[in-house]
Every structure is written in structure tokens, then in C-alpha cells.
Amino acid sequence: MSDPIILFFIFGIVAGLLRSELRLPSAIYDFLSMTLLLAIGLKGGIELAKQPFLSLAPQIGAVFLMGLLLPLVAFPLLRLAGGFGRADAASIAAHYGSVSVGTFAVGIAYMHSRAVFYEEHMSLLLVVLEIPAILVGILLARGLSKQTQWGSVAHEIFAGKGVILLLGGLGIGWVAGPAGVESIAPFFFDLFKGVLALFLLEMGIITASKLGSLRRYGLFIIGFGIAMPLFSALVGGLLATALGLSVGGVAMLATLAASASYIAVPAAMRISVPEANPALSLAASLGVTFPFNVLVGIPLYYQLASWLTATVGV
Image 1 (cartoon, helix red, strand yellow):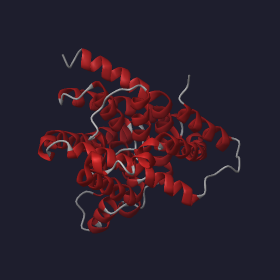
Image 2 (cartoon, helix red, strand yellow; image 1 turned 30 degrees about the vertical axis):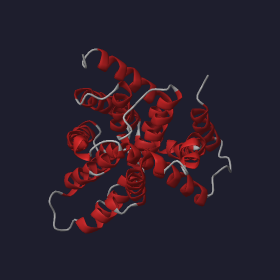
Image 3 (cartoon, helix red, strand yellow; image 1 turned 90 degrees about the vertical axis):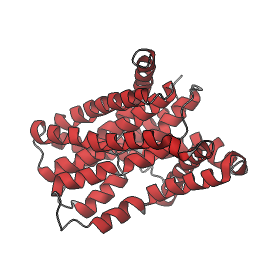
Image 4 (cartoon, one colour; image 1 turned 30 degrees about the horizontal axis):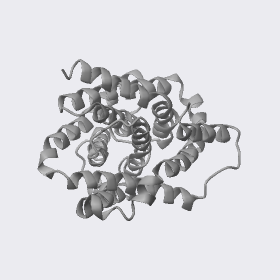
């Protein structure tokens, strides 16, 4: 039987392609996004309360380095094979080095539906992966330029709604601990899949609106939007295996690596690389990679994780 949250996403795509008037009010969409981000942060914070923060330092450092590496792999492919200009290639590369909270949330739901254990501090690694790709993308587009508004970029990264909510949830979960959040668990945890289903309904509608851009920019974006996540998932899976994570943890880090940003990076690129065409990045990340990961990728990454832990991890 198909997972109902995936069916909600498909429903949204169909409604969007039919040009239906169905849309969630913007206030409701913002509420759903905030609830998901806080729930993910709270889960990570609860896990942090159970272990010393310094024990996670090697994982944090390794994941940060992965966030620096992935856009450096994507950039020359986009420049040489795709023929994109420097600014557009740098912007798209930054999207693919960063992460998608929506994809991560679907990954959580997938693991929970199959009772697969994964390390809950993955939400901390989610925050870590938001940052390095943005910095690399700006450097690829600009170099070390005095004109780069580093203060505005830093504010957009660290004070942006997504990162603030994730960090806030992490902090609350960390300070309150498992017992402290019991009173709010029914709202943030028990309703998680229902909130995610409505969020994916709207994401399906938004995805359908980006599909028209694919006709304009050709088959390269489609190929890149599928091949890059597969490569990144392999990198993330190998790294997670080397770090000794569980099968679920390997699958979740592979999912994080395979995802592409559609919130934090577009905002940062708009400030620092305004000449880049955001339609190109969003057509790839939202029009191709997000639906690929939600419909096909996450189960594939779980199979990859099972294989890696059974072979490489031995």
C-alpha cells in the first residue's frame, strides 16, 4: 500500500497540472512549515540531551566538509557539461550542496513507518549542512570580493526563519529533555505525519508550477537533477558508514546529502548573487530533485544504506 503522505504529494502535482484553484492560504503554509521545523528541531534537541555534545564533533566536522565538497563537484559539471554562466552554475551548485527540510521530513516519516532506528541528532546535521554550500556558492560566483555583503549573507543564513526555528527547537529540546517535552509531544510528534501530508500537498502544487521551466531549459536540468542526488547520496552514505552510523542513520545522511535546498539558498543567493536566474535553480531543485527524492530516492537510499552497512561497514 502506498504511503498516504506520498499520495498527498502526487495529489498536489495533479491539482497543479490541472491548474486547479486549490492552494493552501499562505498563513496556513507558513504554520505547517514552522510546525515541521520545530518538531524536527525538538527531536534533535531531545537526543542531544542524552549525550555529550563533544561526542558529536567528529560527525559535525565531517558533514560540514561534505557540504563544502558537493557544490565543488556540481559547479564544473554545470559549467562545462551544462554550459551555464558562472553565476547560474554557482547558484545551482549551492542549492545542491545544501539541504531540503521537506525531503528530510519525508525521510523521517519513511523511517518511522517501517520502525527503522536512526540517530535523532540528524536534525543537528541538517542545520550544519545549511551553511557551507551557501558560502562556497558565493565564492564560486564572486571570488573573495569586497563587494560581497557578508554581513547580510550571515544574517540571512543564521537569522533566516528556517535556521532560527531549527536551532530554537534544538535548544528547547536540549534544555527541556525527554520528560520536559511530554506535554507538547501530542501536537509536535503525534500529528507530525498529518502536518507533513498537508505540507506535501502544497509542495506538490508548487512543484507542478515549476515543471514548465523544464521545457525551456532542456534535458540537462532533468538529468542533472537526478544524477547529482544519486552521486551525493552515495557520498553521504559512505561518510555515514565510515562514521559508524546505524542503517537508518546512513539512509538519513544519504537523504540529506541527496536533497537540494529551495528555501535558505534562494534567499541567500538573492542577496549575494542577484544576477543568477532563480528559475533555473528552482526548476532543478523543486521541479526535478524534490519529487525524485520523495517518490523514488528515499526508498532507494534506504536500500543503499542496507547494502553499505552489510558490506563496506563490515
